[in-house]
Length: 72
Image 1 (tube, one colour):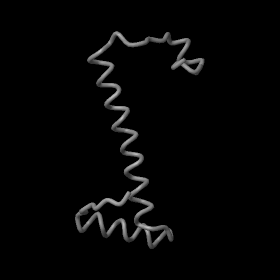
Image 2 (spheres, one colour):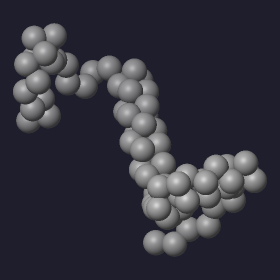
Image 3 (tube, helix red, strand yellow):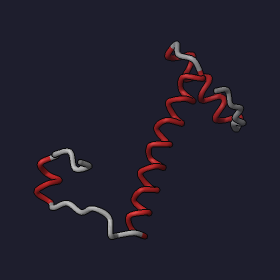
Image 4 (spheres, one colour):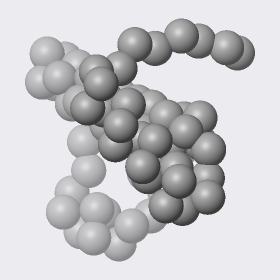
């Protein structure tokens, strides 16, 4: 999907420099930045949702440390 984004001159300059230094495209870095930020925002949303609706599933510290698949 194509999307248009307006960057500040400073951000555009930094993105251009990074792309030139690494040989990757500016699109590559924009895509990576969006993917990483989306993951962070999704985590924040889920945390806020848990605070508002605390009756969801709960795990013990031992279960968390064990690292078992807790969603099953």
